[in-house]
Image 1 (cartoon, helix red, strand yellow):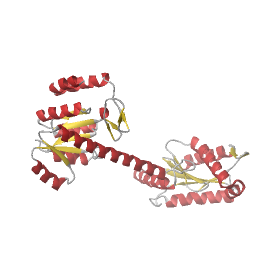
Image 2: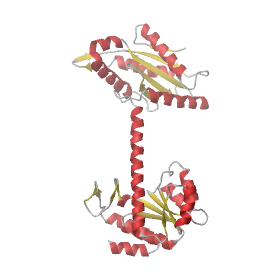
Image 3: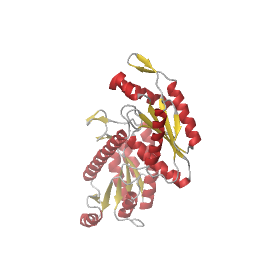
Image 4: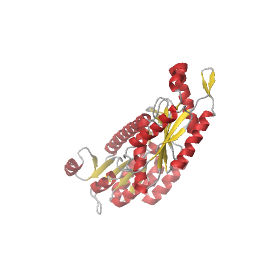
Length: 352
């Protein structure tokens, strides 16, 4: 394989990419696990080198070929660009894991390229290592522009280059893992742990966004609040565990009959709410009645008992003069629920 890599690197850039892509389909992927080599390969903080793409951006073809040879020999996948504009276009098509970027190029300098990439959400986190001719000059530029920026000097030394690449990729891997964990934490903070429905926090954020859309495009928006009838008696009869089981089953029944555009959230112990975008009062009434009838016709298992329950439903449509956060909208829907419940429950009321 070494001789193949040497042959490919010494060919033209276009031929090199064609042959290397062919080799990638023929040569098995070598992997490692937990730092222990299983086959010939390299492992960096969860990244297998064969899958890591590095973009080299330099108008100096000799440095590009030299750097490519070093990286390919180490097991990395390499893409090249001869100027900053091509580099930006390449990143937009397929993001590399790392960019090796010449700091002084015609048309668009390395710093200009990095600034443009940092300005775009999709490419702002791609790590960059700069190429430079004079270490002192590069350090002076980077100190004022990007104090913590890494760089390597030309001509590139294999040991130094690979060490810096490995460090940059390890840092990227750790940042990606942190971002993934933060996303999971945020997602969990928006989900009700009992029913796996959205919770009050998510509903408030979603409702605020939908009210903004409603006002901007003059589209109808309605909310439906649903509360389990006689829930205090049910809690006393079945206890917390049995009541939780009942609420979970009730959530499942309502979820199965929801439209994809609607948001169903658990907003209280025995209370649920729908946010219905593009839905006027007549459509909201139809959905609410369908849900009320479906719940009343369902059976639920609590322990060894099979029970039936009913719900009280309140509806309110957004109108001009209501607040942008949906507090008045939800308050009116809850008042309609309270009125339905006071009339014996198992009813749907529309807030006026």
